[in-house]
Each structure stands twice: as C-alpha cells, then as structure tokens.
Length: 78
Image 1 (cartoon, rainbow, N blue to C red):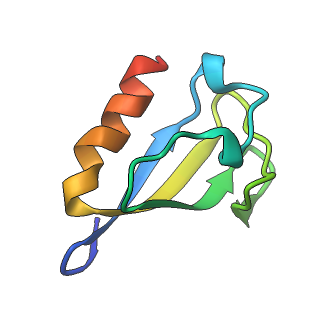
Image 2: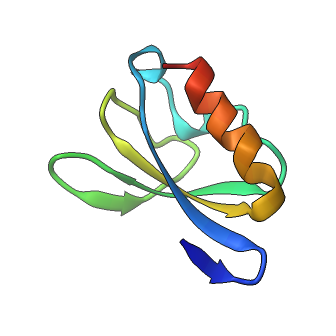
C-alpha cells in the first residue's frame, strides 16, 4: 500500500524459524522500519523488545527500493 511517494506499508507473517525472537533481532535492510505487530489478541506498536511468534503479522514502513530485500528476508525464513 502506497503511503506517500516512496513509502509503502508492507505486511509479513512471522515464520516458524523466527518464533521466539524479537523485533530487535531482525536484520532489516536500510530504509525499513517495523511499526506494528498483531497476533490473535491485539495489535500494538512494535518496539525492539517486542516478542515474535509464528503466525504474528508484522507491519513495516519501507522505502520502495528496499521492499525486495525485505521480502527476500522472509522468503529465506519460510
């Protein structure tokens, strides 16, 4: 979803091998920020210490040029 010029909102589902890690553990490409995490019970702003569980939804703000790298990070973790 385009937000403004070069910023996009991107959603990824946490795969099994990221289960038990935190937002701060993610090796995100430049131009990408995690903004929110959602599970079955709630949606919340993401912080570095936000715990991740398989099936959670992560919402990122990403510069257009970084989306392919972000998608690849999650493809490798599937």
